[in-house]
Image 1 (cartoon, rainbow, N blue to C red):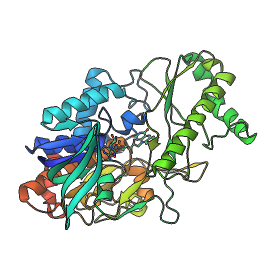
Image 2: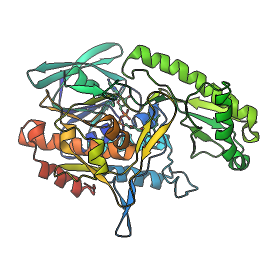
Image 3: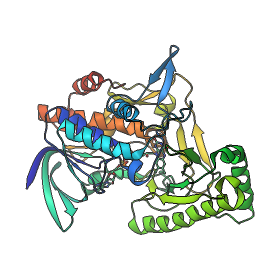
Image 4: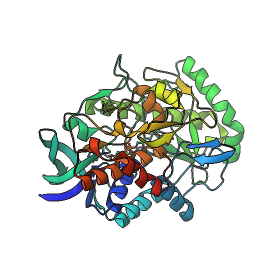
Length: 421
Ligand SMILES: Cc1cc2nc3c(=O)[nH]c(=O)nc-3n(C[C@H](O)[C@H](O)[C@H](O)COP(=O)(O)OP(=O)(O)OC[C@H]3O[C@@H](n4cnc5c(N)ncnc54)[C@H](O)[C@@H]3O)c2cc1C
């Protein structure tokens, strides 16, 4: 059986940052990913752009997500992978192909090993300790052993297999935020689009009222893209489906695909800008905003965020709005942080119960439905991953359960790499 100091499962921004941070501390690391590339939802679900992560403190613009995230965005900038016609709102539209390459290079340069096409399907525990995990890969399954594990699967698969307590969605009905299949349309006449843009949602809403549009989302959410004459759509909406039940997710994929064509035909049939437009592609997987979240050593709440709580064991910061797409139907609610306001995320949210050598990072950390609605964005989950990676390294060096890892040491490693905590 292959053995590593740390195994990270899930190659999204969070898992990559975790693998990079741990490997930089000289530990042997295996990063396991079920697809063929790194980037997670930015790759498989076509999630784009990076949501905002800046504020203003004492008249100075401050990035709240830095460290490895900044290294990635610096590299993107250098390679020309950002949207070139930068406007204040759209500086963070990026080319996901560059991301996949950058992450490969950064993970390998840090000294970690990558394993693609490998699916975590089981955990072997002895008491509170995970001994090994089972990986399913074509054509067979095998076990891998590590001293510490990091769950960066988004759905908390590793924590779930380890018997760690978790919750799903809202406490009263377990409904999660909607799932969305993102897609791109090309050959758009951009000049006409700029003129017609204000008419799109009103007409969509009118047709929705008349029963001619079935999609329950309240508006048409469109973003620019790095490519000329291409628009990105984050506008399908599937509600009341369980994102960790494969039968439900299959139904979600089927319903969302109908919505993609409904939107495409709507635009093509009613707007000059889309007369010669072509549906280019849909995401490889429907995007899951929210699913399992662990019940860890601390449960981060909306109250903590709104109070801009600064925790002693802070490992990341955030100020993205509490952005809740209605889990039942139409509408999206927002709580916006004022300029200069931000909250912190405590290390304890990454520490699960019932498994002493496991850390959980990314959108599945210990948080309520509302708190997760803010911290789930790519810049923040990347910072959480860097913290989880450093924490695993510190726990390994000290030979202690992750809960007992020296938080001052973890924070120092983060600060040394430019992170904001
Ligand atoms: C539709 C949608 C729109 C969004 N819009 C934005 C936006 O505009 N901007 C923004 O910043 N954020 C946005 N978000 C949020 C953001 O994309 C995610 O919350 C974030 O990417 C989560 O990162 P992660 O690393 O925690 O998980 P993921 O990115 O989901 O990465 C998890 C990785 O683990 C792998 N994996 C999962 N299970 C297994 C397993 N069992 N074995 C092996 N590998 C496994 C997956 O293939 C994946 O690569 C959006 C999310 C969605 C769904």
